[in-house]
Structure formats: C-alpha cells, structure tokens
Length: 142
Image: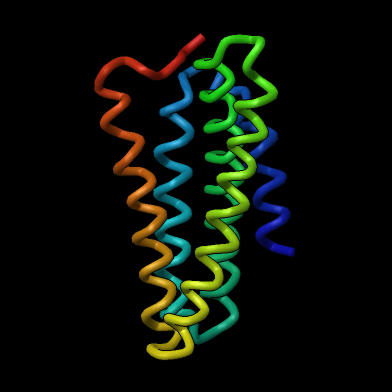
C-alpha cells in the first residue's frame, strides 16, 4: 500500500518535471531511489525500514518508468510508436519475469540478504547503461 501511494504521488509531479527539465532529471534520481530502496531491504528488521523502502521504491519507479517511456516516444517516429511501445513493455515484462525467477534461485541458495543487493545492482546497471547516451545529447527537454 505504501509503495502504491508513493507511486501515485510521484506520477502526479514527475511527468510535469520531465517535460520541463528533461527526461534525465527524472530517470536518474528515480533509478537511484529504486536502487537505494532495494539495498535497504536486507537491513529492514522493523516496520519503519519496510515503509521507507516501499516509499522509496514507489517514488523511484513511479518517476522513472513513465519518463523512460516518454524518452522512447520522443525518439521514435510516429508511425513506429505502437511497435516501440509494445517492444518496451514486452522487454519490461520479460525482464521482470526472468529476473524474478533468477533472483528466486539466488534467494533459495544464498538468502534474501544476497538477493536484494543483486536486485539493486541490476537497477544500478540500468542507470549505467542510460548515462552514456546522455553524454551525446540524447535527452529531450521542453
């Protein structure tokens, strides 16, 4: 519930900020918030840490996901938007399902204390893959 509320709150503001300041201004902090949220989970021995982690994950995902979709739409020709959007969501769903299965195996053998930092690392790798494109002026600010 906390994650869903944070996600809704972030989406109210993130879209407008992404249009005004560029997609990078939303994607980078969003991915960082998501990675931090996942890194907190092995330390979450009380309710407070779970709430903080859920809120950070909701804020980060609620900001980064629509901004990455908007960046995709910014970069694609209008006649290819349907294909691009379908490909985006297919890749997203395949990543979630494959990652869930692989991280489930990791948690089974090494525990959740290992699994969550690996999930955070995967999120950070997404950030690392995004930033090199930014150096070449691939962001859109309106």
